[in-house]
Length: 166
Length: 260
Image (cartoon, rainbow over all chains, first blue to last red; front, top):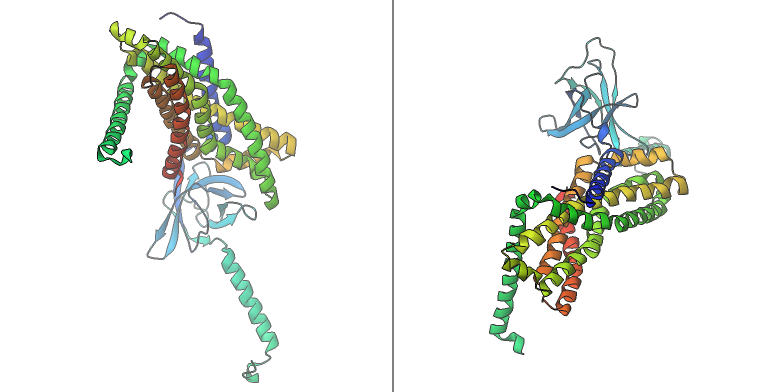
């Protein structure tokens, strides 16, 4: 096949297109943060996971040490079952605790892992038993209102013997 | 009330169906010719140059300005909620998922689709296609298929260039001009854009639009009336139909890809 003067330019065009796709994948989509390192799976059960989503970060001391792989529902204990993939190079004590945190006031939710004190480390298939649920704003507000109401109630109506004053 | 007669209704339906059938046959023919076409790479490369390289300038400039505007408008709304850093995410997601493929396809229809239609229509009007058939050269194989496949190749590359340049344009407005922190601009974007779900689906969209726009352009040229008037009508129809099909298909694809 003979060469033509277009060859260089077509090659250049295809290269620019490929570079653009690469740019989108690496710089915008951050393909590099996808880990191809070995991981091990650990589960944790939560009463309420709030807005946690699969692929959310698992952080310990603020450093990403793994990802949430799957979220399911356990109809025996009526809890959410969260499967985590932790990186092999990080090991945590067996009695580590997990809690669901929010980055910033409106940010996305992630899973915080706090190391315990036990000698043995978590291995694949283990369950993290100490968990703390996500903070649900509605519950927080209603608790606050109830406590406010209880406070004002006890302050306004002196002793219960006072009877049906209302 | 001539058009209400059963015979004219039947005729209208029958011609529409015949048109659709002819279009489907041409499409199947073009798809089946993929192997033969890429065997004659010279023809494809020349068309990629014509459709791709020549469209690069309009795509780059449009992408840059779309990125500028997205960043400005996004910043205007987001800063009210104190999350101006998310403007990077807004620009990247809207470009990669929607605007990149769609606007590129619209521009591609206007820039490359029209010239395809006019070229083929004039070849038909000048009886060049008929002459080819006389020489036992299949015009679908020799003329249409290379143009079709080079359009399919060029379109996703152009869409990727559009999105990438648009993100750079958004960065240009957001970081040096408005003064958003560069680190949070990129980290918000990287936190929210998924490689497969967002970038990958955007590429799939642009491939689909490449098929759509190029095929409509070729079909209009190939089936136009072989007169100057017919060619001009076919060129107009290319832009109108390609734009409508792209927008409608975009809705369908978005509903399929991004609905939860």
